[in-house]
Amino acid sequence: MSSVSAILNNTRSALTAQTDLIRVTSDNISNVNTPGYVKRRANVNSRVLEGTGDGLQFGQGVSIGNVQRIVDEFLNSRVLAQQATASGAEMRSEVLSRLEAPFALDALVGNIGEKLTSFFNSLEDLSPNPADIALRQNVLEKGGELVTSIQNTFNIIASLQDEANSRIGTMISEVNRITADIADLNQRILSAETDDQEHLGLRDQRDSLLQDLAEYVEFSTVETSDGAVQVYLSNGFGLVGDTFARPLEFVVDPSFSPVGGYPPSLSGGGMGHIVFDFDETAGTSHLNLTDAIAGGGGKIGALLNVRGVQSDTDTSPFDAVGDLPAVAARVEAITLDLLTRFNTEYLGPDEDATTLGHQASSADLNGNAPAVFGLFDLGGLESDSGGITGIPDLSDITALGLANVSSLIEFAVDDPEDLAAARDIDTADGSTAFTTGDNSNIVGLLSQRNATTDYSTFSLNNLSSTSTIGELYDNTVTYVGGLAGSAKTSSQLEQDRLSQLEALQDSKSKVNLDEE
Image (cartoon, rainbow, N blue to C red):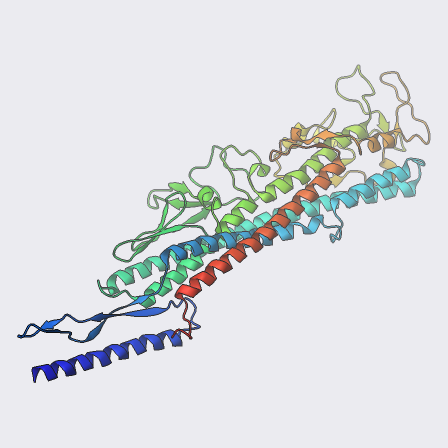
């Protein structure tokens, strides 16, 4: 009877095992379209052999050892890394495609290059008949359109930077939510798993969260012997430990700020820094994680590199290392050129070498000399209200402590009669004489159109360009187009690579109905 009983027990174990196998298959089939579900496989084990008195050995049937997820951890880590790279490339392409808009030929309010050409053309139209009021009015209109296009272009760049800054703050909150959930799942996995059986559902959830996290930051993972996953940034900072997560903060005034603080953003607001506070109870002790995150993939890294990353040695908003500050610096250089070189030319040569300072030798229709910033101006820069004398100087502008001048530039002449077209013909110091119909000052302004300037003297984001003002703008358009084009190509390439890795991952871990 014992042998019959053994046979029946073996049969029962076989039925039980086959039932469990069917349950695993059923579970796979029912979750074929469930996001994050990983294919299961039951490991079937032969039971220990049983000996008999005559020396023969028989098996005791079959049993299910455990049910495991079919995963390739090395492939999973590659997918996570590529997810971060692809997400970052897509985010950068999105922002830079919008940066192209104000530089396009069909820009809504006209691009700077178009308005610069129109302004010079209006001066050429005025030159043969400098007393014509209608032609003078046209110069005023074209000058106004030029400064408006500069303002609009710069403001679009600044608003993109502010938007990127805001989005980073929002995404940091999402990162904190995800890492807290991963730590919670670690705790639940540690409590639920045994030596023989993993908690498959919780591990699926955790893998899905790691995929979500990879959209925002690039990281590496280490699974401990007891099943917890630890998450590390590229600099070794642990975002997630066995059962805890370290929340990140996005602050404008971190504890490691240089004396005087960091420069403002392009618009004059604050630039956030990603930090971890080691001492929440007694003040703040911030660890700077901005560079580490910017150096990797993910949406946050991309936004940091587009927005700009500040360093302790920065002295202006244009010093931040990033795409937007670099483009904004080129627009700012055009503005500073108009405020300094073109205003200097507008004053004419020094009329009186015996008097301290620069005495204007140009005059309007009423014989009045222009102010120091008489053609292009900022509020508070006029010599009669700001106390500025001599020739327009960069120091006069920087002394105002403005975040930028491109959003504030104005065309100073508001009455056509006030446009200075003539220059002094009296060679004696201290006395002036002007002839009717003289266009010497207009000719002087037009000469600056094709004059080259070393724009590195403005010390803007390492801008190094010796060119005409028109060439600087054309180079800027090429630069922006190159940024946007390469970002789009990179995004497509990285997405294709991700798709290939995900397809390979699916072939190993995703449920295949034909196989089931």
